[in-house]
Image (cartoon, rainbow, N blue to C red; front, side):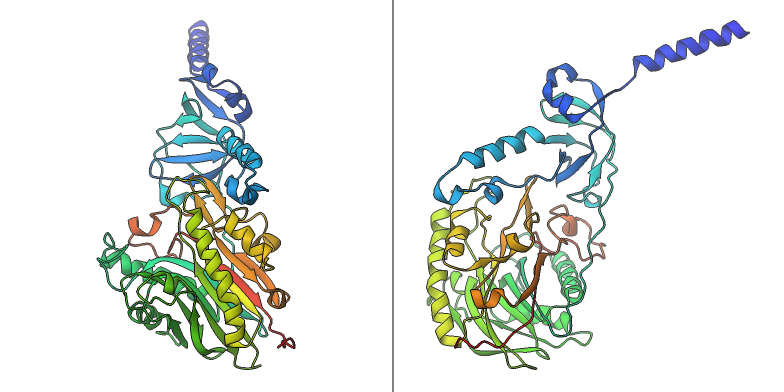
Length: 431
């Protein structure tokens, strides 16, 4: 009996050893992919989720930033660092094909002890769902009593009229879900002014948003650019009427009211009711890149946008009789690209890299960076108390909301994270 049990135990040990899974670090795996091809391994290196898609995750030992965000000298045509970062990101990342509950996995999550089969260079496969460790969701504290909170946000095609430009695939149910999420996020931000990109121009979409925002005691109003072509992407300011009020008419960078750029680049002067202090907000939405293209795609168009903005600012100073200017919006450019560096070299402070250098507002194909900006004139920059992105959108799977109609969270109302700016206005003695 004893010998029989011993034989069984020995056979079991050999059976288990035949199916033993080799433990390797990611560095070992990357050094010789062919050695581990078609083998199941356990990766001992903790991995960060850099991108989440239908059936795959992009994983790396740390967050990957796009080359245009970090490559110094890029604006002057030096591509050396760009190529180095591009090569590093490609070598450091792996693509895991998995049965992924994508709405539960967040960019930035940690994967430990990943077991998967190596199917090719930088390609892994598992038939199981992936368990990740969520980093704590950051909470946004209220601004102090003597501070104004201003938020710049791309709200991703918020239209009242469905079936028109950029909304052909949007259903009424998805629109209602988006409105609920957006209103929840706006209330949670406790802002006094919202500078919103990608809102349908005119009155209908802003009024639809305000009806929900004011339903439970809010005191918000809006100002947007008049447009002859109402079925376009534009911009809008939503403001708390108890704290601020606009003065004078908005000033646009374009005179043609049939062009959607007329509504994508404009400035409004605001006055703080309690103190009478005034300042200007310029809301700008530059030409987008086409998916998968590098920094030079549509760069000429975005440089035209930059030239128009640079021409608008002195006009705004004269029109609103103030030189405290805050520039917000979606510039569709990362920090080291030519349009951004042109604005900085004109004397405007790029506040996000100064205050949150290792952060981001957008994620695309596993790489993060700042597309959304906060610039300030010299007199305005000294009045900014803090500025930061709030990660409630970019870290979540891109169809998080549309696929989960019962979702009650405020996450992923759009694809960009909002930029939260707290200012403490001071008396301007310069004008």
